[in-house]
Length: 341
Ligand SMILES: Nc1ncnc2c1ncn2[C@@H]1O[C@H](COP(=O)(O)OP(=O)(O)OP(=O)(O)O)[C@@H](O)[C@H]1O
Ligand SMILES: [Mg+2]
Image (cartoon, rainbow, N blue to C red; front, side, top):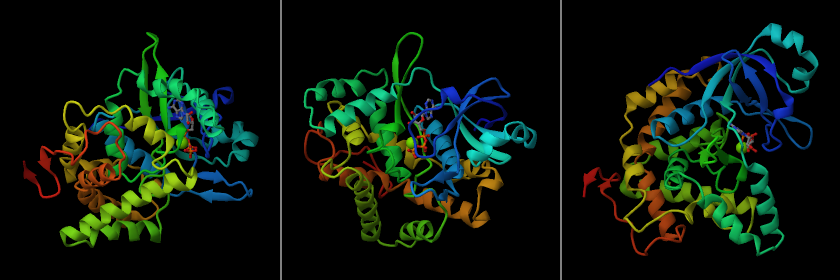
């Protein structure tokens, strides 16, 4: 595992701030001369109170590492430090942003992101403008790495991330200087169904860790798929799996066999020591629940990696994959029973 990059925040570049996102990440220049979007843990709620997403950095750093390990395209990322002196110089702005000295999670700013376009498409679709559908469908198809959609869906199942299926801001397309369009997954702060370490998170983890029989494990998968879909349905009724999920799945190719085979095997092969090293690299100030929190994430992921296959099977039965040739998906390795088929 390569070292995680660390740098100091040297400058704020407000003009580059994205408009999207609840936490409104801030564009900064860091001491390693790279531009980052710095995430915040305190989020402004519409009723003008603040909400402390106490595990958002911890989950971002953990799942970014998992994504890199699985070769899923994500921007570069770093642990960014805001020093006391920096706060002194930028006091008013940083105060209004609720920023204090300390460590923050940041992702390297991708060039030429096409976000606003997606927003326009989605607005048009909601407002019943059917002619837009054709260009919307090609929007996600014309990328150089469309084989990644299956991998991203499998990662979202593994990490219980319902924050992409309907959230157009969390799957972004960036073009390089050769004008090649490439899709990236970002924003893992709301994985495991919430950005917080609390009784609900512990109950979720126990739901799997206390399972004993094959039926218990199957029931856990059913509940988690239901919860992922509920996220989608609540946000945008009548969209079923969610607009972004639909955009991803409609670009998954089933003509050469089960497109989830490789990624599901790779996830189930992640070792405990790999997971443990990822958890160890998280700064202790981001871990509100001390060793217990780290231990529970390790044990949970170590078992959840075997659930992805059944989650995808359940989704398939629910008609999630429109290009599927029908019937059951064929698996090379049965990760549920650990059997080579
Ligand atoms: N590395 C990056 N490069 C380019 N743009 C980015 C990057 N990271 C984030 N953005 C832009 O900023 C937006 C918000 O970022 P992000 O999703 O990380 O924040 P958020 O506040 O957690 O969002 P939300 O909670 O609404 O999902 C993204 O939708 C994207 O437009
Ligand atoms: Mg987001």
